[in-house]
Amino acid sequence: MTYEEILTKYEPVIGLETHVELGTRTKMFCGCKTDFGAEPNTQVCPVCLALPGALPVMNKAAIEATIQIGLALNCDIAEWCRMARKNYFYPDMPKNFQTSQYDEPLCVDGYVDVEVDGVTHRIGIERVHIEEDTGKTLHVGGATGRIHGATESLVDYNRAGIPLVEIVTKPVPGLGALAPEIAKAYVAELRDIVRSLGVSDVRMEQGSMRCDVNTSLNLPGEEWGTRTETKNVNSLRSVERAVRSEIIRQAGILDEGGKIFQETRHFQETTGDTRPGRSKETATDYRYFPEPDLVPIAPDRAWVAALKEALPEKPSVKRARLREDWGISEIDMQSVANAGAVELIEETIAAGASPAGARKWWMGELARRANELDVELAAVGATPAQVAALQKLVDDGKLNDKLARQVLEGVVAGEGDPAEVMAARGLEVVSDTGALTKAVDDAIAANPDIAAKIRDGKVAAAGALVGAVMKTTRGQADAKAVRELLLERLGVS
Image (cartoon, rainbow, N blue to C red; front, side, top):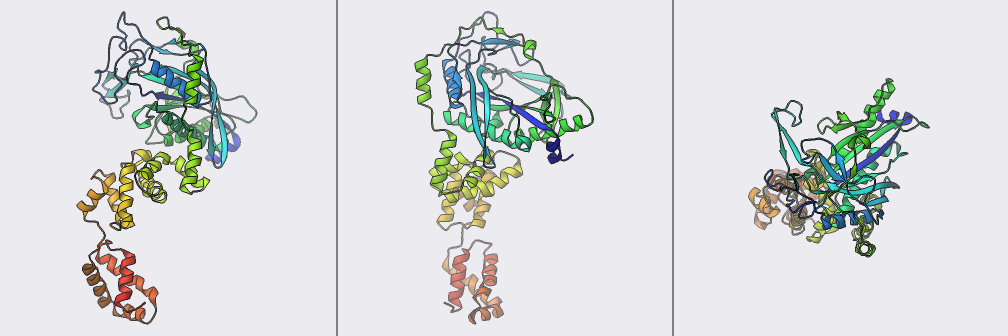
């Protein structure tokens, strides 16, 4: 069946569990640094390595950031909660348990509104809780970077103990064929909200925000089906693809009379499908119990109220304001938001570009390149400051659009800022009047018939001579200036 046919027979239910690494200077329960990219196992201590006798101490900044996230997601903040031990064995867990929260989370019962195709969908938030991140396992010696086929595995514990917030939605039924797009829109909105708070850089490509996508299918009127959990999806585009892929895969199994098993799965970026991981544990398998080494958390109500009062402008409100400032339609603004370009365009305007100029590059040439490279727009290789500088060169007449695209190609390739690329590649618009006049005269001399038509009043024929001049100058002349000079040389007003 096609995807459209599947959705006439089955109803999808989705749920998302999003993990956000907080941008604190130190880890959740110790004073180790949290710098990304440090040499393996250089940011560790007896606490985050779980050596005997080492005791944890709560990071207040992490608790504050979690409360801010909960408030921004319209959650209720618990007056009293506590940490729990989540027990399971895995090499990247030094303690063989994760300090997390279970039945008493810090934030509960919120929601996020997202808009897709002009319709607002409310995604319920079940809980927002604080925990610690795990270490990172590197499998080497194989072809895929996964454990299958690897000859050895290495563990880096730098990430173990970094404050991690888990945001869990309630099950979301009734989305139909739009389920993949709404899942993507939700994660994008969540990323914008968290980024606006300044508590995380939410860089999915670096793993500071990653999403587990739950998907199930059922026949209309029947109970929800068995869900699968696609783990650690690390881009907005992949969230959408993962949901769509699981809908198609599960429908194929159900149509053949098969059974869906509750399991984790891994999304394959190259093929766009998911592969089995392990059978999915239930809460009882983790043997949760209260963490005896940490005191309960009881946020002061005045503190919570002050944090709520200090929340920044909501991204949805900000988009509405920017839409008015930029003078664009709701549909155009939705496209900008879907592309992850709101802040990029805003920063480009702040760097000196016009709203139209900033939008043109980010939503045009750069969006096209991002799609070709299969990366997020922010990772395409150009900064807002560089795009603003490129547009200024166009505005100053030093580049035309064709040359500007070539300059942008060099910027994305890492050749330098726009002015440096323009100089190195010799792409500046020809402004030497003498050189331009000679090129025009040569074009007239080489095409006497066309020149005669123009003199006789057929000005539309000038396009051919303009093209000849542009070819001679390798596209570096200003077409408007060439046309004016051409008509002047032919005595046509």
